[in-house]
Amino acid sequence: MSQEASQEEDRQEEDRRLLARAQDGDVSAFEALVGLHQDRVYGLALRMTRSEADAAEITQDTFLSAYQHLKDFRGEAAFGSWVHRIAANHALMRLRHRRVAQAAESELQAPEFTERGTLADYPVTDWSRDAEEKALDAELGQAIQQAADRLPEGYREVFLLKDVDGLSYEQIAEVTGASIPAIKSRLHRARLALREAIDLFYNRDNRGV
Image (cartoon, rainbow, N blue to C red; front, side, top):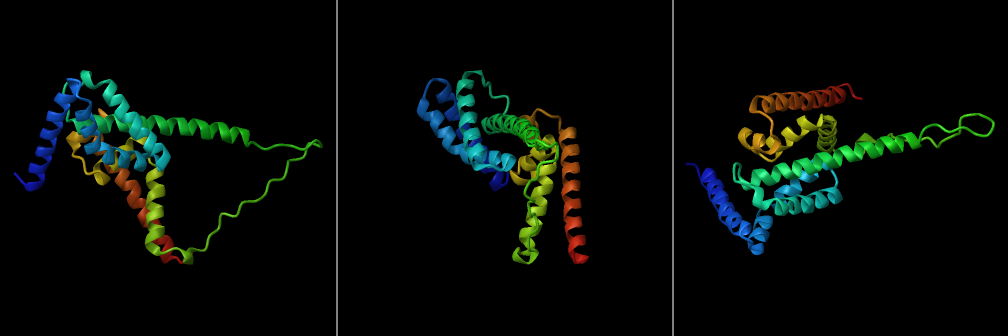
């Protein structure tokens, strides 16, 4: 067994000990579990929502949900995977609510007309920026991030869990509830989309755009 695998087994064993105590009513044991997993939960929520405020709220909601359903957890999955799944579900719900709010706001910003029936004037927003002010790697990073943000929720979730958080296919299956073939398919398509974004970026740069 590799050192990394051995460390992961030790972490899971510690989780199991703390979980057993927490399910018996030991609040300090649950607090210890929170301390062990809150950074990864926050990191996942931040990468999914791109909002520190949302990530902080999702982290709190995740562990509150975990505490409320602690006695229902039977250990079919690792505690870390279970908590990751709760966090991912909260993040996805937050993203859906955000899209609904944005759609409602867009409706409120529909074109307005003056009393004479002419289209009201709006200030023109200047979206241009001086590319020379940004380093090449920063631009590329932005292009990749934008491409990741445009991925369908299921694809983005799998990409973050696999390529950013480093979870195995089995762990992602536990977190998402999807089958491993479905996870591999989503990950493949997500990587293709990101690769296309990188190719477009370099082609644009080569054209001097």
